[in-house]
Length: 377
Image (tube, rainbow, N blue to C red; front, side):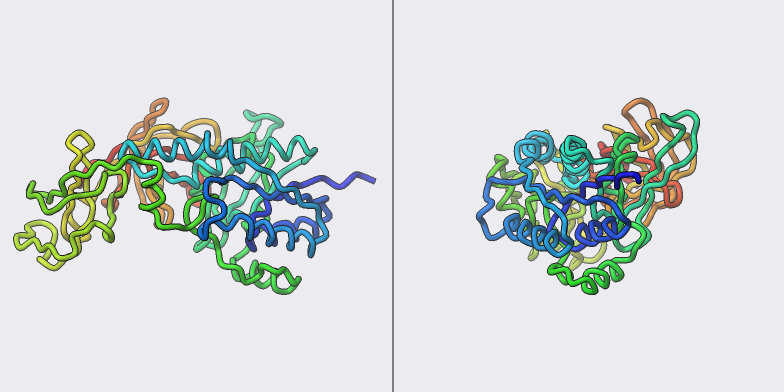
């Protein structure tokens, strides 16, 4: 009789990873849970819930009858994720910590630890899928594809686009085939204590907190002028790092009107962050959601990562420039080493340097890169 294969599941304390562990155990695997602690700076504060998350994960392990290990990756997280996160903000860009967190912690540090425990594979509660395709050009004659999760409202392939062949070959996404409603139903049916727990939000592993106040602890803030698209000074910003393109709330211009409003809309239209000039420390804002400064037909991206290990061919494609966005038809104009140029059929709103441009061929996530610039429509 063959020994059951060992799967190590990242148990976060949430319902998705809990149901993932349950499904794998039902399939006859030997399942071990790992809880990752990755943040320590203010872990006793009201915002960070890692202690409660661990208690929830331990309760799940108890109900499922599996072992759970508490592992501290805080040093890895600080060095590999948070330091880069701060560097990007300091440079005026808006990084996506979940993308880096998946690539560096969940599918590197955690994967390496699981392999040391004798795991055949790891599993997480992400809404995505892995498909094996016969391909003689790849090791063992198999190429692994990253697919969207079947629940379109929960698909998380965008955050996983930096995973490579070696990582995908060792990864399972048990809930990727299910809608979230079914995951909740299963959790309630088997009596999981976190069946109704709300989904986590906020910065990966740090949680939800007053963001500007949090960043203020780590970044120097240098106030400067806020100007409109005609160069008129409207106020003062608190530091360019604290704003992102497309931002509407928290700019501090609620009572300011633009009576001219030549290209953005009426005088009562909302203000949006449109540009950041690091050289002059100037924040540019415009009125109206459809202002031309907020629309881009083309973008460039660097720090590229391709799931298949090689770049896709030039030509028609689809891409997302932010997570909660429908795939947008585009064309790969050029891809050379670590530089990608995309041109969109329809202008994209508030394309933001530091965020990820992720490419798709239907349900297949091809990979992508970090947006370095965009051209206004």
